[in-house]
Amino acid sequence: MMKSTLAFFACLVLFGTQQLVRADEGSSDRGYAVEHVLLISVDGLHALDLANYVAQHPNSTLAALSQNGVTYTNASTSTPSDSFPGLASLVTAGSPTTTGFWYDVTWNRAVSPQLTGNTIMGSTGGNCPGTIGAVVELDEGVDNDLTQLDGGGGINPAYLPRDPTNGCQPIYPHQYLRVNTIFEVVHSHGGRTAWTDKHPSYEWTNGPSGTGVDDFYGPEINSIPVALAQFPGCSPVPYGDSIPDDGWTTSFANIMCYDSLHVQAVLNQIDGYTHDRSSHVGVPGLFGTNFQAVSVGEKLKTDPVSGISGGYTDVLGTPSAGLSSELDFVDQSLGKMVSELKNQGVYASTLIIIGAKHGQSPIDISKRTGIGGNQPATLIGAPEAFDISDDGSLIWLTDPSLAPTVVSLLSQPANQQTLGIQEIFAGASLQNKFNSPSQDPRTPDIILKVNTGVIFTGGSKVAEHGGFNEDDVHTALLISNPRLKAASVNVAVSNQQVAATIVKALGYDPRELEAVRKEDIHVLPFLFDGN
Image 1 (cartoon, helix red, strand yellow):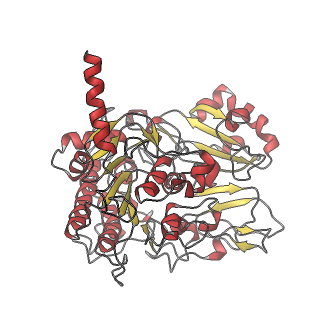
Image 2 (tube, rainbow, N blue to C red):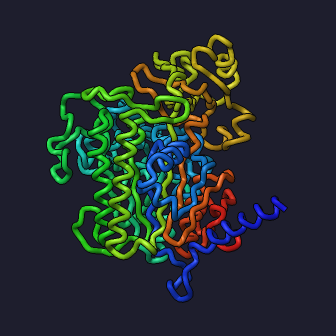
Image 3 (tube, one colour):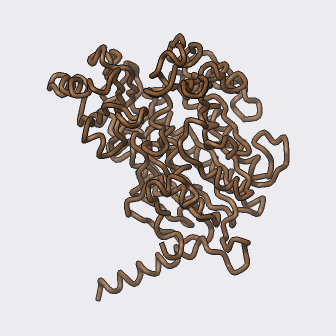
């Protein structure tokens, strides 16, 4: 009898949830209440962070959104858990095997080097088509001038990889993406789209067509901080030249100022303007941005000026003073967005999605183990062509046939200890998860999953992302709308399902997304009738 009663109430909860996105008869041409989707990635936000914050801040914006929302407590982002594959999963429904995005800086066996060098990778360029196999750098290194907030006017094609099969033409970020995006789907149906992110290179959200995003804004996060007179406390910028390089990410206060640019862009779009408020174009059907504040709050051991600590204080995810301030900033910023949606009369018709491109590891900072010395390249030596290593390693070799020899080297107990290796993926174990390196020129030859807490750095940061551990991939996911009843779902879901859900919520067929078809991705459960 007790089981029957529990099942009855469970059905009531699910029934209420399923009815949320359906509109009252005639409320929308497409038969849906949702006319706008606002997608927010709070980079670094774990499912644990969201649960803790809502519990401890019952009057917060996140708590209010969860009262009219479905919280997916067992959501996972991409593996590897970097910003590029993480965002790609959210906006294409694809994993790296389908999108071709492994990291923002990778190696590709089928492209030629950039025409000239840049200040990030120290490359001097290379011949095309004479040289095949090159670094593909799609972060701040492709800016005309990465020290400037606007990237010096955007992307410099001389810093892009080149296509040896197409007259050595530069390959722009959107051309590098293999599948279409949610922005392209919405745009193809006449909807307006907008996106804001941390580098000009995130123009790849346009998708292969190059036209998916009507209003793109990508202020350079690694630029030299400058006064932002439009934001209280940001003119002059809080710490100016009193801290070292790495742009806006070197202090808790500076990153709030930077993120305020993203927040203001969204507020302007809610008001029906472009991100810079230069033209009135109407509220986008699909728009959004990301926050870097939480990620910085998790990474910085100590603020270099204020002395406030970052990271977590225990294994239960209790935030430090620095991280707490970043979480509060994000919550208050979300409150501004919700308030503006209400002011403009579009709150009820907007589906708000709070997720995260990636998590951050470790939460238990007592496990933090820094590994410097240019590892793992130093240990591997000549066989390595390139690696990208933050809290995991993607390794490309000069010749894939060298993989067994390198794996044998890495497998030696002393070397495993040196690199903090938990698992090595190569050969069949890698191909069980990803495309074969022999068939896909972008796939790494070897992937290292490291012990929780291992960070490839000689610096002081206490956390990093990009790996494969629980703290890297177990991210927050909240879907909110006034029509939704509060529900908590612990069924395992993936960020890849967010893209399919967005397309369906707006009344279109999720199978218009190429990755949905290629990977058979389904919409998130308990939101729509019949799923």
